[in-house]
Length: 115
Image 1 (tube, rainbow, N blue to C red):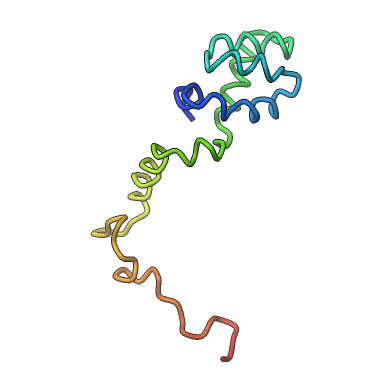
Image 2: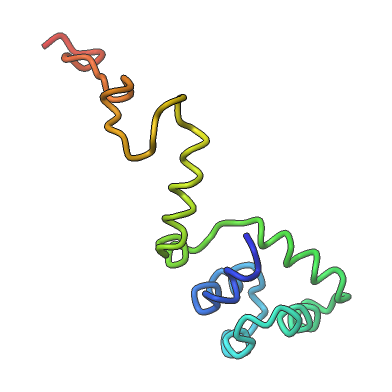
């Protein structure tokens, strides 16, 4: 995930930050307000590590899950819609009725049932 998303939704990331760095203080994290440099310095101090190692930990953390508050953002909907285009058959549009392409065809009797 990009830091701009973290910065824009900082409050939603406070809990995930505290889960990753449990020695961090919630009020301190909240006061950083998405400033990446300040966050890096703070993590280096809390973890008692070099700044470069803090940057590496943060980069690894950015590869993790996006909080549901952020994922539900309309901007993420647009990204998901655009991403869905990669998984479509030729000539299919994300807003098409799946029945035209055979995706929704299910047997009348569910598999494993005799009714």
